[in-house]
Structures are given as structure tokens and as C-alpha cells.
Length: 223
Image (cartoon, rainbow, N blue to C red; front, side, top):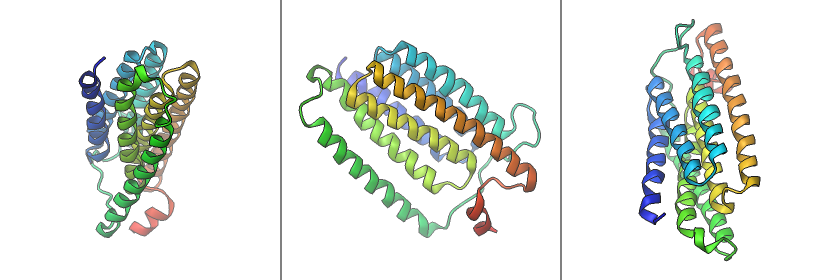
């Protein structure tokens, strides 16, 4: 595949990740995440990893999506959460968190450049792996920033899953979709699903007890 053919799905992945993490309409953000996970599944298929594509579609899109909807109170369960996220951090904290994500991205990029620049990667796969590396780094930066910035637990669950997807893409870009890498990604998808189910259950419990959608000290600071 040529580089332009690889850049289109890569840029669409970054766009869907941003749409998922930046949208304060929680139902719409969850739908954007499902579209993101389905596109991830297509990416694995294009990388000749059909079993991983199937697992991504089942665990990443279907089951994780259901867990997120359950956290919101859909379909028809009670108590349902407000569909808009009203929690906001003080504005003076935003530049620091953007800077932290940028520093982390720079360090990760330097590490990736050091690993991929030693000539050990397969030259014939270079055009395929370059978009994977760039996309993985961009998605990881978005996920890390969103996890640090957002207060709403559901949005943090979305950031957690998106961040994991960025790590998976980075692994595939560095080592290719080998059996060992697919095994690591499969374990990561299972862990992400379990974390999403537990997080959604915790969110429902917090909201049922006292209407909270944030955790611990952060919730106390907002009061």
C-alpha cells in the first residue's frame, strides 16, 4: 500500500479519537468511540491480523460500548446520568496539562525515533509503519491529556481506552503485527474491557449514592 492510502485511515482514527475525547455530549462521545474502535478493527484487518480485528470489534466496540452505555444508564435503566458533562477544571490548569502531554509526546517520539532509527525495522514495511507510529503517538497524547484533564469518570474511561489503542498502534508500528504483538494487544483489550466494566459500575454507584460523577479528592475540591 502506498503512503497516501495509509494516511487516510490514520488521520480518520486521530479525528475520531479527538471527537470522542473533546465532545461534552456523553452519548455522542460514546458513539464516536464505537466508530473509533470499529475503524481500529479495520486497521488490524488491513495489517493482516484478522483474528485481532474480530477481537477488537467484539471487545473494543461491542462490549466496551455496552459498558459505556450502561454507565450512562442506557437503555432504560435507572438512575440515568445527565447526557452533558458539566464538570470543568479551573482554566489556569489547562495550559499545564497541555504542556505535560506535549512533553510526554516529545519524549515518546524521541524514544520511538531511537528504536526505529537503528535500521532493524524491515525496510519493506517502512511506508506502512510510519503512519502507525505517528498515529499511535498522536492518539496516545490525546488520551493522556484527556485522562489528566477530564473530571467526569465516563470521559476518563473513554480516555483510558483511547490511550490503550494508541499504545497498541505503537507496538504494531515498532514490531509489526507478529503473533507475540497480537498476543500482547489481545491481553490489553481484555484488561481495557474489564476496566471499563468496573469503571461504569463505579460511576453508576457513585451517581446513585449522592449524584457524583467524579472521584475522591477531585469531587471534594469541586464542592
